[in-house]
Image (cartoon, rainbow, N blue to C red; front, side, top):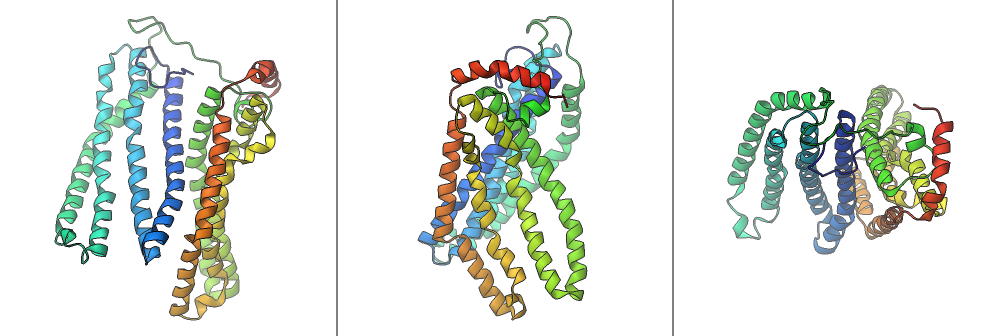
Length: 384
């Protein structure tokens, strides 16, 4: 695989073009997960420390910031992909100027980014308008801005989607020129190791560059495949729950608790298949294999935080009346954004950061000493 992700010189084969886009998308996906994790303790701390009605402020700020960060990060993918597109065009015998159409894809995305911002400002207007006269009388303006941005974005999307899809399909499917051109000789594809040895084996060694690329690719694939697959199973279980609600109330409560836990698990635990690759990197650096759990410390608060909500469905409080149920729900939210929860999120985030930094250390002599072992493992393990 071509190691220069953002180089504008040279040529890129179809396989390396797909891998490069996968690494870039995986990097954006990882940044999104990291920012969303960091956003929780920061938002909870601000809500608890500076606002009396911390629950309403927390959900308002967190949801608006979550949507804004996601759209902002995904809007970065087309600009970051332009160097790879340029080199792919070079391989087809065309100049890099033909990469300009991908910039058109950024326009509707950037306009759509205005939507959560406008909604968030509108919510703030409703919340603090009476206290700050500057905000009064702006609701109609923000509503018009939302409608205009959505209309323009949808129009541009439908006008650009079909030609851009055809153009990208042409980039992916068309073979490169077999002869040398003014952009260089035909690129030689690097021989990739077997999938099992590269991603799911703790034996062998892996360089820092290969570790980063493989981790981002695997994280992207896991994030795209596992949670949606789990949703299909949960939808079937929800149908069984609807039948049991009328027939067996107690069984319905237990099943509801299980469904909520299973709903959370795929979104929390999908990075765990990276564990063998992390172990392989630690082996390269000569570190203890027990450090492999350090980067995954951020998963602990994600597992603990939803538990108060799951307990609501298995308790009798939901049958006592709406007032008690509301109080139980408020108690669950307060425990989620309370000081112990904030401390847990912060501590686990620090531990994961330490673990990731240690994984990204420079390759030492242990890699050169064990590189021969890696080739032996690749010969022994079957290709997938």
